[in-house]
Length: 194
Image 1 (cartoon, one colour):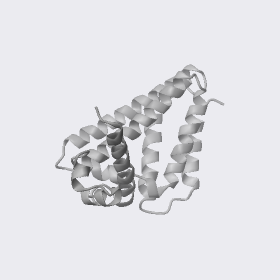
Image 2 (cartoon, rainbow, N blue to C red):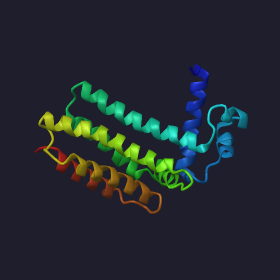
Image 3 (cartoon, rainbow, N blue to C red):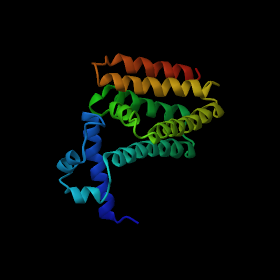
């Protein structure tokens, strides 16, 4: 069991590492870089994480858990499905325009590492995890008669791949703010009953 100080140190490491990964991508960040920004010694950093891969994997898992917990909590509170959808799509829209905090390039690099065949399975597992979270929301909205009876897999793929695509492109070129707005509006039109 990790003590409070250890948890706080891990949170600090992940916070600063997130910023580095967003700025440089995954492959360019070293444990030395993380030591410099966190002000930890190499021994102090290695006490918590064995590699940049370990840190990045935990950051991704935290992000997925946060989304899952948000959806499940709101569904258990019987909030309107439309409200839950609007909240998450607002966040997605803001994130699509914020290239500075996008991990899309780092995610691509992390999962494209050839020497670690395990990463491809991890990516697929993350995809399935996200799929289940969205499936729960879409089925909830259909059951509450707020959403159209859609093919949830197609809608999920539209949401996730357009979101990640815009985030990836935002690292490479300027993105007109109307692009995310139009994508979000189309997703709402597909899902929300008139």
